[in-house]
Image 1: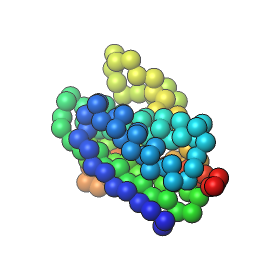
Image 2: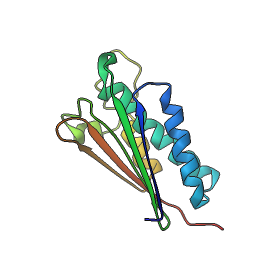
Image 3: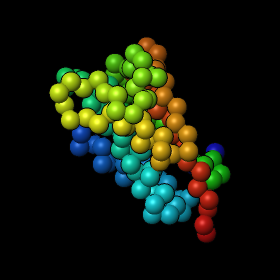
Image 4: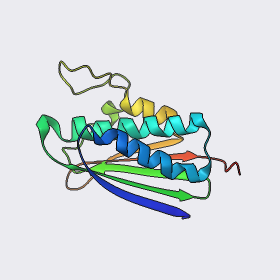
Length: 142
């Protein structure tokens, strides 16, 4: 591991932009392109939004834990909550699947994360919550 960061934020909509910015600034150490940085920010935004909207429904209070590390040319990101988790992760990873009734949700969050990152792992945490692990390989352009 070359460097790491851990941040815990209240699961509030206004903190989505903060989480995205923190990881983007952290990733700058790898000198990513503008497109790579945009991919990372979008994936983090989707993961954090999922925590807020689906992990803590009905306005319940909770936290989002963000851990990132740089190992060589790889940016490793973990975003987790202690919310309600997902009963069927396989179904939730399918495009257009959503558990939100009547809300304008596209059901594309995991698909977007998977498209913009090199790897994506989604797992329920014990005793509750969810953890999303993403990686992106970035060649150092010094």
